[in-house]
Amino acid sequence: MAGRTASQVIDHRAGSVAERVARESYGQLVALLASSTGDIALAEDALADAFERALRTWPAKGVPDNPQGWLVTVARNRVRDVFASAAVRTAASLDDTVAVTLTEPDPSPIPDKRLELLFACAHPAINPAVRTPLLLQVVLGFDAVRIARVFSLQPAAVAQRLVRAKRRIRDAGIPFRTPTCADMPVRLPAVLEAIYGAYAIDWLDQHERIHESIADEARWLALLTASLLETEPEAWGLAALLTFAQSRAPARASRPWPPLDQQDIALWDRSLIAEGEALLQRAHSLGLPLGRFQLEAAIQSAHCDRARSGIVDRATIIQLYRGLVAIAPTRGAVDGLAALTTPS
Image (cartoon, rainbow, N blue to C red; front, side):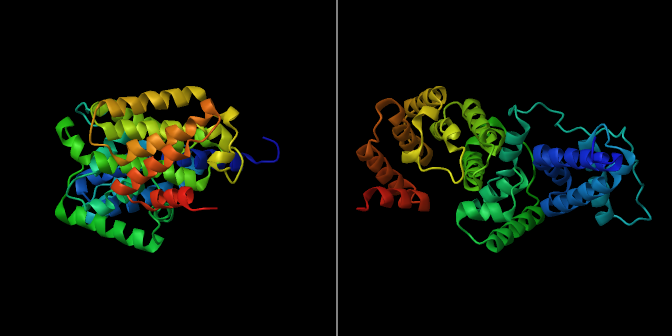
């Protein structure tokens, strides 16, 4: 490759593989490491050490055929160092033939590993106030700074809460196990909030390549969750909400993104709008309770109707916002209603 030495090419490949594994498998690897000890912080530290060692070792020795397995093996050795002395520890081989099983031996009722981990980590014994930030960090890999932006909190406060939550999980022996289908509904709110939070983080970052970002993955997870649980209206509401939001992604190519009423409706994806309408109708057909995500999806639906009518139905949107503020008075809902009702 012109302008680059062979060593630089190898270093770049090693770094690219490590970055891809971190992006795609971080939560899975942490959960595997924490499943035996219940110590998330230790698992994260051990995995960080493994990634650091990979960046030192892979450029010289080559990227292993099974990079996830290599990382887990190194991290597990690090965990053993914490619990046992070097005198009694038997060193494990770190060659490329290491094979680590990255799936549970028993079939899971959840067909997607990342969604499975979200439900596993949404244990009801964990403080509800910290469940969603914990899922965003441990499973989806966001740092405290990005999580704090979603919740309008200080990063230091979020980091402290996460540290305390991980310590409680360790001390209380809260297990990392895939819940049964019967256990999933009680864990659903935290999972939906985490998926929505992931989308919100992407939106706040105003990602330049929206269709290659976490936004599409969040929508996929929302659709999968709704299909898996079938009769949970809020799951279908979230799927509709994110589908409507993604239908306008092509109109958000410039930075900063233009406001809704200034977006070029010719760029909106009509097929996604139709899909969002079908998903919202499915949510409504399941009956009460009428939740936050269904109302937010209905607001998005009213905005998207401008693609058909050419006008914004402010009266309907204001009514929906009032309902949203009544059941979920978040800062976004309150600010949205104020913007619509305050005289210009």
